[in-house]
Image 1 (tube, rainbow, N blue to C red):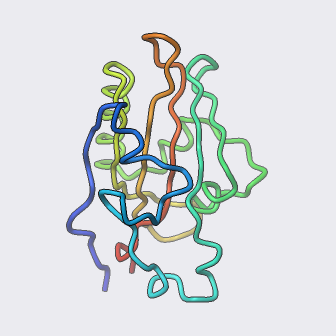
Image 2 (image 1 turned 30 degrees about the vertical axis):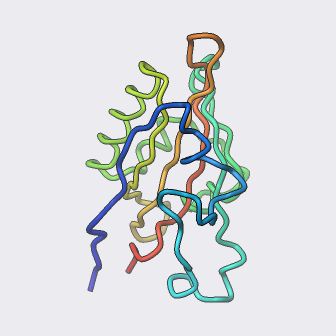
Length: 159
């Protein structure tokens, strides 16, 4: 029986709160607003060591060029050496999640705000899953030049 994920995270936040919502090395910190609970029951202890957040970046100055860590490729079920475009990645988001992500992305760029969003994705050759997307703009002066962040599987949101 497919379990649905009833309470996804969805919020925008100002850049001065970046440390509160977006700390690359602090994803399991108890100081976070939405701490990540133990995920052993989801993936099993054998794979727990492999379940690290993936780091990503989208360079807005370079035609939305993506840079992904290996963990992001794994989340999307794509071979780590594969070339990926933003359009290819966005196509893997389920419709409602893609619409929410695009809306928050545009808002983040326009208003220089970060956001956190749980999205449902359809990985290559795998079942749908929920992923938490944490995004923060990188600014040069008043202009957003990049988006960067973390992606990781949402505990408790899988079959």
